[in-house]
Image (cartoon, rainbow, N blue to C red):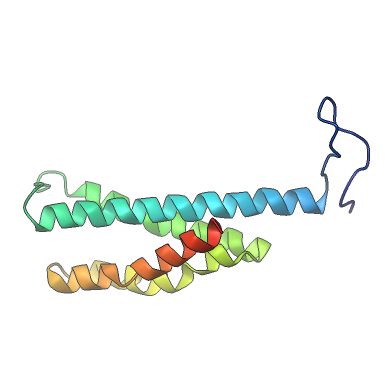
Length: 134
């Protein structure tokens, strides 16, 4: 595997990166994007949950929105962890502990307990974001 090709890229004057180094950089940017998307989905889920719990939004006819955001959050988090495992990127691994509270949520019921369990995942999403963008 070649790590760097020394010929010049057209019009840029910089050497082109090919091979393993370029692939790793591409996957690291994928981890960053997935961690960011998972955190945004988590924030949207929490925002909708707080709005429903406080009575500002009525989702009695469209409860599926909260469920769809939850499924999106879990799927993006899993994809971030899986991609991080292939690249050994720390940012994605920060989301792995969030799987425990997210996994318990469907059977936790509603109310304060549901909110407390959901918020238990917040530090892991925040840590993943900080690691991804630092």
